[in-house]
Length: 264
Image (cartoon, rainbow, N blue to C red; front, side, top):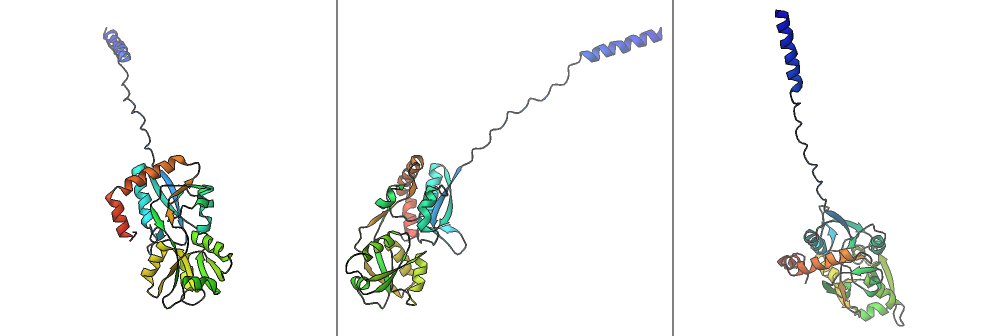
C-alpha cells in the first residue's frame, strides 16, 4: 500500500511539473541606431603657407583667418573640416580630381579660375604689389624696364599678370618663379632677385616680419576679390558655404577674426 501511495505522489509531481510555464525570456532591446557621423570635408591650403589666411604654425597646427572662418562655417552648417597643404600651382587640379573638397586659402576669384571652379560670395579685396629692399630707390616702372629680376610664386594671379606684362613692348625684366613667396623673400636680401611680386595681403605680413623691405609700387592690375572655391558640380556645398559666410559676417566673431589676423 505504501508503495502505491508513493508511486501516486511521484506521478502527480511529474504531471504538475510538466504543467509549469517555462521562464519567460527577457524582452530583447531594440537595436540602437548608430550615431550619424558628421561629414568631414578636406580644405586645400597653400602648401607654401599663406599667412594670415592659411598656414602651418611652429607647433605644426594649421591656422589662419580662412582656416578659422571655414571651421566656424562648418560647425554651423553641419560638417567638419580637415586641412590639406597642396602646392598652389596644382591646387585646382587637386580639387577637380576630388583629392580635396574646397579651397579656402586666400584665393583670388578670377574669371579664368571661375571657368573651372565655382566661387563663394567675395569676402576680401586685394591688389598686386612689388616688394623690394628698403634702400631701393627705383620706381616700379624702372624695375620693370631695366632688366631686373622679379620673383613671384608660380600659379598666382601676380605670376600670371607679370607673365603677360613681360611680353609687352618696353618691358625688360626677368621673371623668376618660386614654389612659395617665402622662398622668393629669402633670395631678395642676398640679391638673387631685385623684387618680389605678391598680393597686398601677403606684403602686409612680409613687412611685419622684415623691416628691411618695403612696397616698391602697386601693379596696374584690377583689384581682385577673394572667395572660397568648390567643384562646379558641388552646388550643395557652395550654398552651405555662402549661407555660413553670411552668418559669419553678421556675427561678432567675424570682427574678432579680422582683428586677430590683422585683416582690414
